[in-house]
Length: 499
Ligand code: NG6
Ligand code: CA
Image (cartoon, rainbow, N blue to C red; front, side):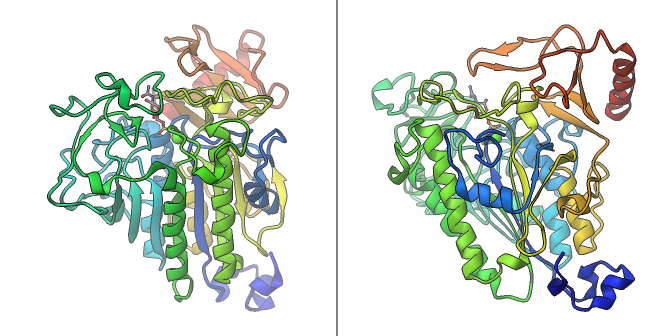
């Protein structure tokens, strides 16, 4: 912490937190990627992808090597980061279709609501994927409840995922550019008569589907779910990165000059499928579209950082950089992600990937950056995205009211190695316990490998116990050799899970 950030030295001597001494609360920005792996960032794993702007955040701040998303899939992780609550406490916290109702109870306390209550202007730009409405959304009217009802003053979102309908942007509950004469209809059950699908009209498909993704075709890309109408409102896939960047920059510029601090949840869509880089990035990685969209995301982050700098607020802004779950190569389209991978290792040294109980499912790139206030460093402390709510609460003097969320503020500031003693990680509703350097995965039925995506899920007939410090790649199941440790961890797991 720099003395320049403290209004008087007396505060320091008294041991009073600097924010209570008249220092304005910092702006807070989450830069949250979608399916970006631990090894996809060159600051984590020097590979064949160069990500200089992500590296600037990671190497210029605290780089966490044991930083976790709460789930190996998207909606549960996003639920957890915004509520400070374990996703497995909510039985509906699964990968949501585009028509799912809002997953967050409107009465539930959330991180953006907490920030609002403490003087922040709050905004979300990018992927939502937490459901909208109460079960039967009319996309042609105001869509509510949604982000604006759970703590965001401003929202500019894609409802679910880039591969799911409706393929439109929604700003503060209204579909953008909607022509009332061409209303939108959406269904995840059945097609609308006469509308083309990837099965019936393969000649219209420009990106071939591998599994799933064979319903409505939009911009030549077959999607999950059926959609009719709303032609003028449909997004352009290749322009999505620029589009969200422009909205995020506008939010920053509009709020930079005000006395109030802001919170921006900037949820980038890359490198989730369909991977549709802008032509400027096509072929740039030599790894096909997956590599290209990671380079695109890296560029976006650089441009976004420039906006903070030009607005003269970089030193007043805490940035949290992370990903919602681990990497996947083939996630349902033929896009050469496997064939062109070369030497690149999206999982780094970790086993598994997206959807997996193994480490690569949930251990993700995770860094806190605050120019002038956080000294660069590497932390091996066990931290999770659930902890951001209580930790940020501690920073701004707010009560998080989220019992699962732990105050690790000093760790996020790089001032302490204080960590969680344990963490329950989740993957497609299955859970495992990390405690200290150990992880225990209970037996689960189901395939060991999900062959379509070629990822080991962590399912096995027996208990698995790994010592991550010695065996980060989870190659040696120590359950039989350590019955004592196993028993202790099963007990702890059952206590926390309440089973
Ligand atoms: C899966 C999709 C996958 C992706 C995922 C959600 C199929 C076969 N697979 O069901 O492509 O959309 O859901 O990803 O449909 S997430 O990052 O939003 O969790
Ligand atoms: Ca994801």
